[in-house]
Length: 293
Image (cartoon, rainbow, N blue to C red; front, side):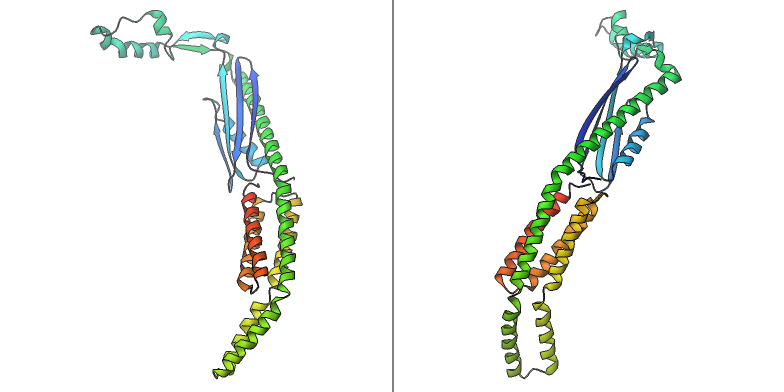
């Protein structure tokens, strides 16, 4: 699977008989997959279609799927809803009696919401099922379009992330070169410190502890090796088939941990400068990784 982003938008339209509809699917970044669905009354089963479709295509992201539908009233026969009409008449009686409003006209009453009900073939179970099938096809079409949009974002992110990994690799190599001068500096400092301790009459145990601390500080090879290993891991994830967002996010934390340790061990301004550049690049890498599925 190519690298996929988490933001995108897609739209699909459809029609069946007197019904027409439009589906809009959009997504933004999210730690997990969350799908929200809005559809017309009476078509609640389509929520499961939307959520199952999202689950089959995506692993992360906050998705919103909206299905807006309308039915041509002219396609059906009108029927007066007597119950609704009587409620309107009863609600208006006090105002008519006091003369605040004129008696309502028949055409005015019939124009009120809910007084005229459209009855057509949608009441037929077979027709309703056919409409739901057609709407479900449009839902899946919109989700396919959303997946394509997220893959386009991933294609745009891939060279950016690859370039940042190359920069991290180059800085790691520079760190190795700079660290080559660190043992000599630390040796000189160690010699001075040993002289101070001897003049103070320090115990043998204290001298051994100081020597061990200086030896650990001098060696940054372990941090550089781990950085190189993480570079290889990042490239494998970027070129792999599986969704890589979570693992790249974890890897960015490991990158930063090694860069911080490198800076803390550094006794040379050149090595410290490399460490700071590493941290800046890793932070940029981490920010971009937040957009990867």
